[in-house]
Image (tube, rainbow, N blue to C red; front, side):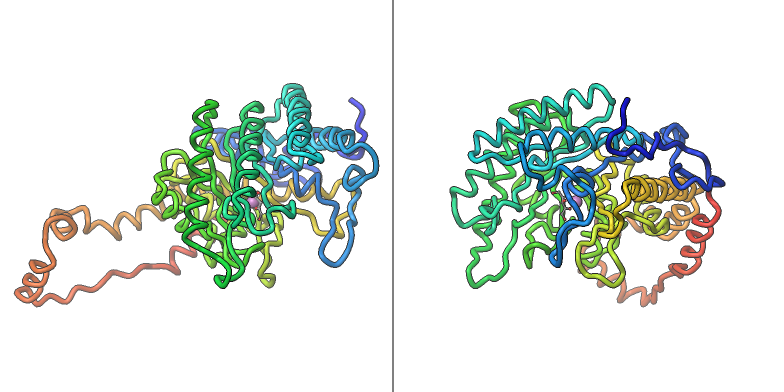
Length: 442
Ligand code: XUL
Ligand code: CO
């Protein structure tokens, strides 16, 4: 194989924690079995097409800095799309990830008409199918980009204009079918501009009903075409709109219940979106698991001092351990995976920087899996929690929760004159236990 895009990098291999080779994995050992499943099966890594192959480093202050010859280039956009795809699959294969994720316009250029956009996507789906066949890399999820084109400036499903809703529905229909043809394991809907800037011009109730209707249409079509995977909502509290309807997992859960969609729709939790919503990553996972809607994860991180969506690669083993712990407790990822919705810094312009970023992210998540599994396997947190709630397992506990009325509980307290007090929550001790496992589990 000729290597036109990443000539200085060979296939990345696992070399163990003592390795000083920066182009090797120190923790991610795809075949290592942990708790009955290989690391590859637990983690189900995916690369994001948009950050890694469609973005050239531009920001609001200046143009691109990264070498991406197929981005914004002159000439036939379909030729560039094919070149981009060849680079992407060389990268996926050398990195050894099982999956990738895309928006429709990441893999195929928009045409002058809707029909031309559909033809472009169909041609690139054929191309992607060939690459998937050749490399064994699969599609974790596809999604329609309903936020970049100016037509979606006032939202897509939640637009005040029914014609925009109609256009968005058609675009989703085509992208869902494309995802199905490529064997996608899930279909994602991030409500990029499904929110509002000001209530002065917004009919909030109407917009929520529109969003409910759109999602219902998508679920109906998923069944009509026999798409096996779940539809995933991706919560985010704000950015680009000031208030996004899919604010966090709890908001998505309430929305799904209201429109009776919990059987077919789950959530794709992004770590930094959780942070922006004022939650921990682990909280969002636990909230989704509690409601039975844990789908997939966009593995990334924010920056302690920057309050926007910086999409860094994950580096904190402790933060990711706490999230992985909740994922494992929930039974692990099934159709979902860990998608690196993360981007390089603008100055990371060397050709192998994309590898270093992903290697760091994969090793961080692999180490988090090792630590989380050890914590769970040794039962050091669960034993304490079980003991903490043991009262509810007694006959008395069941009575308090199940059969006694408010008035009976009142009468009881008057008669008993008891003065109950909780036992220590032992938080610092438990935090020290987690720190010990972070340091020692291997
Ligand atoms: C935006 C974001 C998106 C979604 C897919 O913050 O996370 O990239 O993951 O549209
Ligand atoms: Co995301």
